[in-house]
Length: 129
Image (cartoon, rainbow, N blue to C red; front, side, top):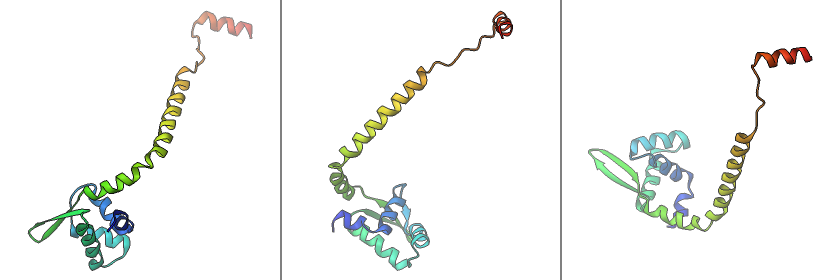
């Protein structure tokens, strides 16, 4: 199965998002997925199996618990495919960086009026008015 076929399903993408923060039990994953997608426990198990069978996740047993973790290998296929499009957003990010730097320079070079606290100047100004 192609990586985008696996990632095309919102449930499987969400599982990977949850696992991006670290290893989790199948029970913890199922609790979140069931709440967010209103699907049954067997349906969650099927999604976990698809991810595992296609190398997106690994699972290890610890007693009766099953711990799932992301496997980066299949995601490299996605990364390779996206690589041809990076130039589009890299150019825009570079342009944004240039504009932000220009704005900072302009803000720093703005001359603010000085307020003279010299009493003589204050007296002179008051007399002139």
